[in-house]
Structures are given as structure tokens and as C-alpha cells.
Length: 172
Image (cartoon, rainbow, N blue to C red):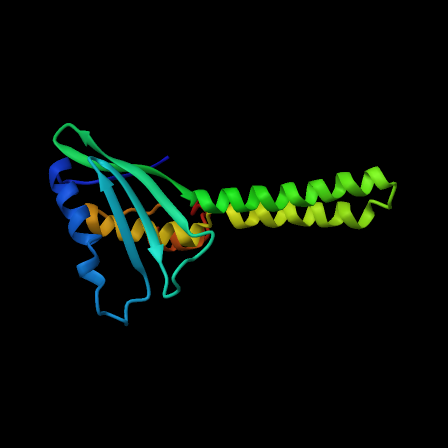
């Protein structure tokens, strides 16, 4: 679970979320590389990056909630993939597994089918991972909404350089 704190109230965060994710903000601007589309229902929020193609399979989705922390608010959520991505991956792995069962019924050599099954499972896992760089792009966008910077998902070497510490070594 990722939590991004803010100095704004939850109602102000809702207003800023709607403002920053509105389609009018990105309409007609072809120079923008990263276009984020957000949906909100009450205080539940969803953020997805849209590329120039109509549909991008295995796109990362941030699903979260705008929470009240007393005098301020925060955005809490998790990084997932689209439901379509999970279904397609499961169907492909199931199809390869069925091929393996049919080959075993016929008494065929299973080495090639086992290799295809292993590669399919590994590829499916890699496609469903949310990488640090991708999460960082989402967090940077959400930080513009919350108005507060964070060092979440920054590579460790950059985090140490930011503090003035070379590779985490101690001076004593």
C-alpha cells in the first residue's frame, strides 16, 4: 500500500484530483508524453496512463482512496494491472497447460511443451509486475495533486546522492 500525504484537506484533494485528471487538461496537446486519465467515485480514485495507441495492454493502474488524516488528507492505494491483463494472462497459461495435458494423454515427449509452459508462466509474471520506474511516474503525477514531494520509488543510488551520502557508506 502506497500512501502519499498532503497538506490539503480531503475535499481540496478531491477538487485537485478532478482538475488534474480532467480530459480538458490534455485535450489538443500532442507534446505531452504522459497523459494520465483518472476516475473518481466519491473518494475512491483510479489513475491510468494513456499512450498514443487506443488500447495499451498491461498498463499499470493506481487504485486508491482519498483519506482524512485529521486536519490534512492523503492518497492511499495500490498499483495493479487492468482486469483484462489478468484474464488474458490466465487464459494463455491455461491454454498452454491444456496443450501439455493433451500431449501427456497421447504419450508424446513433454520437454518442448514443458518449456513453452515455463516460458509462458515467466512471461506472464514479468508482464504483470509493476516496475519501480513506472510507479515513480505515477507517484510524481499524484505528488503534483497532493502538493508534497516524496522519495518513494526513487532508485537507491539517487536517494543516497540526494542526501549527500555516497552509496550509503558511513564517514566514521
